[in-house]
Length: 266
Length: 199
Image (cartoon, rainbow over all chains, first blue to last red; front, side, top):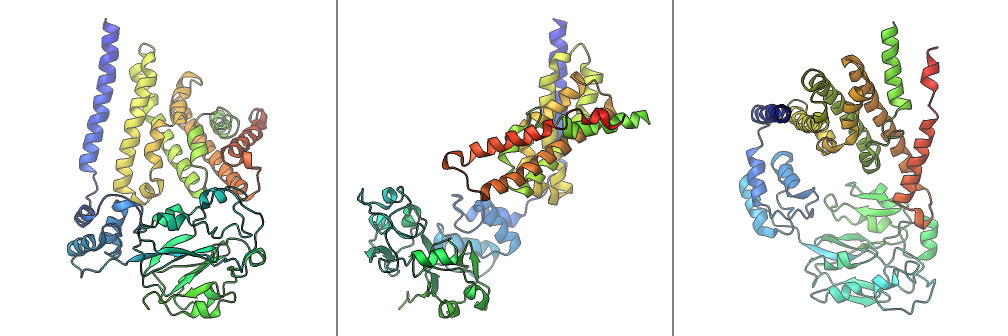
């Protein structure tokens, strides 16, 4: 009886000491959290989608309150959340930048060839499972129109074997982005004037052989961009729209014309 | 001089011969989970070393002066309790005084609570090796460094694996596990070296 009692008392005492120490430590050594961070955090919708470019709402609130991030980056929250965040921070409210879907591939039937004859179920998801699809370029649009089926406002049409989004109809919901098995469709700002029409991560030579309109990763755009908004990663030019000034120089210097000028608001 | 020699032997054998990850297969979860990138592998290794030394510094006196022979059977549960509390305490202290280190260790610090290598060191120092306090501390530093070494070597190997062309069926975890077995096999080559080093 005494042995179980000593064991019981020993563990309880050790646990109590550890607990009291922890409680004291958390009380006396706690780091005061920025009040602004808390207030901004309460404005945000707490869905942790990451659309703002930060790891969840906590990180974004911290970035706004301490790092001076923009107040209009919460896309699901739209203008009302942006207005609240701006009020907490005491700055002028800015509208949320509206996004549209964009198909980053120009590998139409003229530019690409077929490597096999696909006769299966006519969906991109099924076609991409067999040798990555029938097209010569394994990164490109399959043209079966999974995205068009999903589009709630019928903004996507199929032309010459690739999908096109009509930016005037698109509401930027992003359903097509997650549906595309090749990850070609991206959301870009509605005001963007240039976009890369290629998704191929192959080296210049092979990419060009498989598709005449492919990005060959020559870095001409990267070198000529005055605001440093374009980076060539994995043999593919990528535009950082937060830096892009829509000057259009990249589209002019691109030797394969895979960077297109857009006239969305026309 | 002999005392110093024995400490060096303890340290070296903990790093190379008795490497906890590669020879004793303790702490495999972070070894496979956090070794994808070099910087996170180093962060985890440093955090584990730190907690191991702290845990040994606390558990050795508790075992010797409180539990002793009579309450020896309480060792496991008391050690787990202490290590968990210690990790929490370390986190609070780091957050207050060294926020940069706290941020770089990030989520790895709380994860160490359940790392069996830490518990393994604390128990083996007492049950298996009968070390005194100084030897225990040196041994846990060595084990921590061995863990760090294994993590760094393996993260280098994994970045090589990612770039190479592997058959479809071996991609991902199978190739990783085979690579881990090779590293482990390589470490068996250290067996017997330490004894002959100081002859």
